[in-house]
Length: 466
Image 1 (spheres, one colour):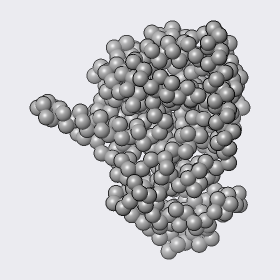
Image 2 (cartoon, rainbow, N blue to C red):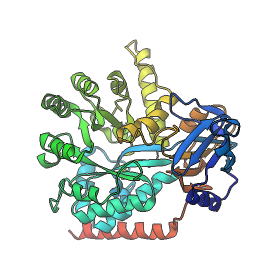
Image 3 (spheres, rainbow, N blue to C red):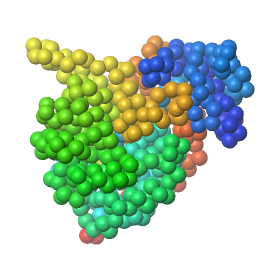
Image 4 (spheres, helix red, strand yellow):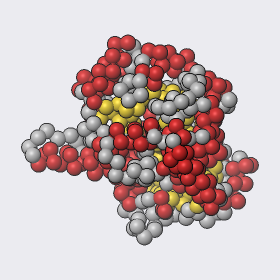
């Protein structure tokens, strides 16, 4: 693990002194920047400056590397941070409250119809903050918060404040609630939210519109179509579209194509049970896709099979996401392993039955989905998702010599199949440490626990009083 202290790193970050991570295995996830069994990553401020085998001896970067604070990463893997392309963060006080949920309808009625209307802005803050800190603890440096409980401007402000306060690279995707009373300030309020942000590549929090694919669940106001497409176009933001599955979503996708509003600024979430025609239109349009492997399989969304084969066949490399913690795991390791196992099981089973089988995906594929492709789906592929010189220093230092990882034989295989949150020694977002020596930086977990439990209990009391 790194031998320099947290104080040393914070001082270097504050003074813009370069930081040299040296000696560890380096996984870049950039096809133009080779992985290294033993290598260096040089940071200046918030950015990655260079990746190489021996930067101290490098003519271009040697002087800068010599002036750097050195972090010894021998026995570790240095990799990009994971990217979550879709999580309903406000629900996190309710995590695993319905672990054996039977179907989407039960989730919708219990959580979105039954509990969501009782949330205050403070509850939004507490849930979103807990989700973001959990993400950071498990190596997720970027999280798209599909915030679909925006009942008032204050609810949205609280959700954004939670992202800012945790220091995660956050994407606030704003949507009106499905059910209950609300101020009807959405989507116009997105303009105010964006005006209050610094914006640009240096901002850790960015914004987008959120919508559903059809009007079946909550009516036409939050279903994507020409009106919401015009809002997103005027704001210059991308749109995340949830509940994309089945025949009705397939028909909607083809309709969007005819209307000229199926384009690369859309991220379609789940995408299970879609028709070949819909996938062809998606591939032609260049949309991005966010898969939620455990959500699709465990809750049973449409076909219940994560649509990785369909996406790849259409020329789309998907991102991965957590979805709802009320019923699912919180971390990206689970998503990678679930998708890897499900897809390879399907391919092998098809071959066993003599049917046409898709090529089996690899551990590098799922790590690509969990990093660079997630960043691309979040409209941040030019900012994060790989250890590429010029990009932001969003990265992990993962202990490869822990008992569950030793000995290190394959760095990508270890990240995907061996490691978990306990092995993450450090998490940097824009060069700033958010986890160090295996602990979240600057967080009072006892105080957090009290806030979370109090918020959960208050919500449950309000629901019971209805």
